[in-house]
Image (cartoon, rainbow, N blue to C red):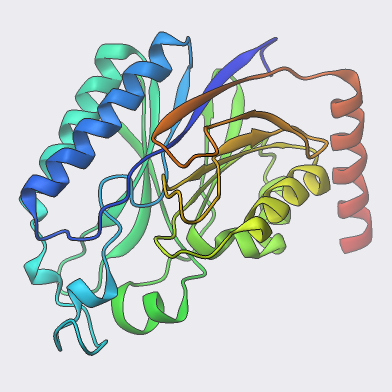
Length: 277
């Protein structure tokens, strides 16, 4: 790792209707504002939440109407408007010289889309895409195709792994990224429900401590959910957090390797190789 790498995690407003072009533009404007704030704070990479542009509602997308959940009718989504927002985000990444990790629905011809994360380089190029693998019952039954593979990428010699949605509940996915040499895990998670999500914080901090890595949690700006975005260090402690009032905001953390982290990571990896052989 470099001596210091600065990353920004965000929480942003999650809107539910991908058929509404005006709503998609509002989300895109908010994402770009957060990107500018991250760049102004010196971040090398900005990490955005699941649904940062849109978190399609099962009721909005149901082919049976809002009163009955059924297969999603993705022909109703405004794919042109969505792609326009993604294109503008990529262009801003290049302008700001910042890497952007942005979740979005990924269209697939003649099949259900993926719930995905795009990795946009500081040159404005999409260099990787991760598709959510776990999927809730609603997502897998009515909305999305499931992803199959972990995805890693590197920025300035630091290796990142990607997780999305309910991936956060499956420790084996994080162990897999440890085997792949990930230094930092980027977890994008959204819920528009009113329930508290303390268990998500526990999962994130546990994943950091159990794998001796940094974990960035980008959550939805949702005051009712009481889940603040943040970055946990390799001992499971929060380094930085967004506002706990659920408002759109940016938290910046400096990732700095130390001898204790190196020793812990090397020990864990050697031991996992030994006990799995």
